[in-house]
Image (cartoon, rainbow, N blue to C red; front, side):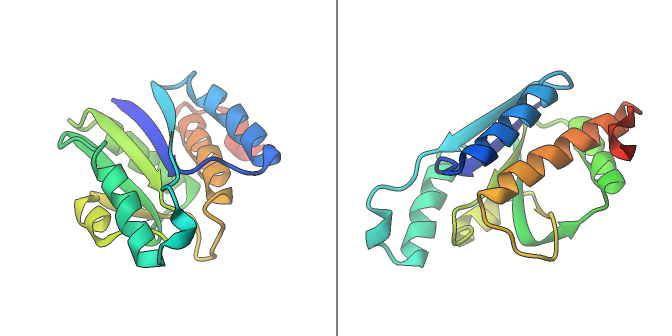
Length: 157
């Protein structure tokens, strides 16, 4: 199964880009992995938050296939320890879906239609993080999960 990590809009901070690049490269040693940056909605500043979420949702849903497993990174999602998340990833990878897509929404979250299509929701923390910082945090946790599954020492260092 291919694993993809999607998010809306470019990452503005170079330190976040650099960190993301490190974990993207590391993850490709463990599994077929791809990062996809979905373009920002045009004229987003002229839209109300609900309108923006709707437009972002339309762009997301146009790229999702019925055979994809869609996991939203959402503050109201299920929380795991790092070991629990590793087991969750392992279970999903052994499933019958073609792609496992983890998705970070825009600044205002997801549209109702995206929530309806989602197969699961995952919370990284009870705290709120910027949608750009979550990108780096998630990639590190996915890498950590892969090292846990392989019994490698990264998790304990």
